[in-house]
Amino acid sequence: MSSNAKINNTPSLPTVVLFGRTNVGKSTLFNKLTERNFAMVSKIAGTTRDSNLGFVSWRSKSFQLIDTGGLLDIKYLSGKKKLKEIKSGININDIDQKVQLQVRSYLKKADLILFLVDNKTGFLEQDRQMALLLKRFGKKNIILVVNKVDSPKDRIKTAEFYKLSLGDPALISAANGSGTGDLLDIITKKLPPAKNKTEKNESAKIAIVGKPNVGKSSLLNAIIGEEKIIVSPVPHTTREPKDLDALYKDNLFTFIDTAGIVKKKSKTTKNELIKLGILKSLSTIKKADIALLVVDISEDVSHQETKITDEILKCGVSVIIVANKWDLIKDKDAKQCTRQINAKLPFVQWAPIIFMSAKNKTKIDQLLELIIKVQRARNKKIDQDELQKFLQSAVTKSKPLADIKVRGIIKKTPPRIKLKRLEQIATNPPTFSLQIDSKFGLRDNYIKYLENKLREKFGLVGTPIIIKVKLILGY
Image 1 (cartoon, helix red, strand yellow):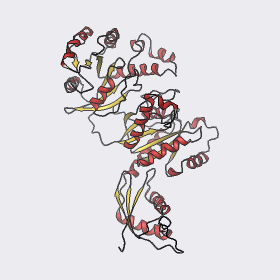
Image 2 (image 1 turned 180 degrees about the vertical axis):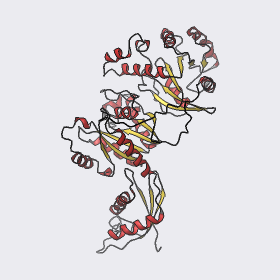
Image 3 (image 1 turned 60 degrees about the vertical axis):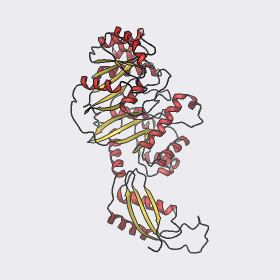
Image 4 (image 1 turned 45 degrees about the vertical axis):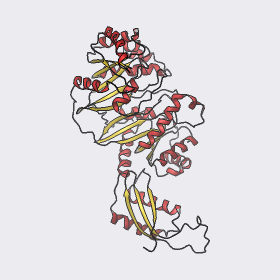
């Protein structure tokens, strides 16, 4: 059965779409206007595949900005064929064809289009064709933007773009930011008012990570309820992180689809774009609150997934293991599969596992509820009196042992350790200070024991727990 989760993709803000040929500087302008280095920039044509989505605020107005993939073939925009006919003729392995269809979809929904042209290459016939097609599309709200006007002498050449009959062009240099303030002034004047004015609360950042082709993009599309991310059997279809905001039961999430992570020595990392995408994926994990570790349950958990898990734990990020492609399993024994996953990923046995099919959109609502639960656990603040009672109970059930082996001290009877105080000093993730009366320290396995008991007692599901031991002699 498919999910009935109700997701609101923040439709209240006006949508501005960046459009133009490949390599005219759309991603550079996107990064400049959103004030973050999110979209991958390269001289290689067709670098941007999935559209980047970001938010811009300027002079008390906000809008959603979409950086589309560069148009390679005009026929997908022309509308001469019906969309169903075009889709039926698409090769699922041809990613460029899917990019073009996604561009067309965004243009149809746009409130405002920034038609970007390149001053360095000058006026091209493809620019003229695109301008004509935008007009046939019925789009009147178009701003012509001439990019790469890097110096005053470059302005002379811009006159040729008046041939497009789109009015006075906005002259900018996305690389150095020249003219972008004036462009934002023009945009905000042309924007329609927001449909619903809602305050944008702090969102939970959720990174979708895993190896190539485990179904990360399919999962995000299933959650959002639209094909926002291009899906293909071809490995490394997603080249750069893509974030999408979604509202579910008054909870604001920012989902980030990342490029598939492979070994550093893999042959695929010789490709400049794939290597850059992997580095951005690893950087994304550091900024996330929760990582959805997507594994292909029809295959064994690999060593690469243990490495990804290790990266997640280093960053102190909460974890939910998404066992995807559950529809491919004939004998569905969730308990046996759970044991197999835990055996391969022993350091995150505390992470909840959900068995689902992104392709069939099953258990999406259960996943969203689990994300809410993990996020609440991550930010939970525990009362001090409750922590002291917990500590007394834990010590009664299992006596603490001194860490004497590390110091090379040999004794028949280890010295007694007194645990004096357990105090929560931070959230996101839950962090505790444990004061002990001992010069020897505390064994790691006892700290793990306390972590497990904290999870059990206070419902700290799916989140790492940090316990910092503080030695206080003669307390």
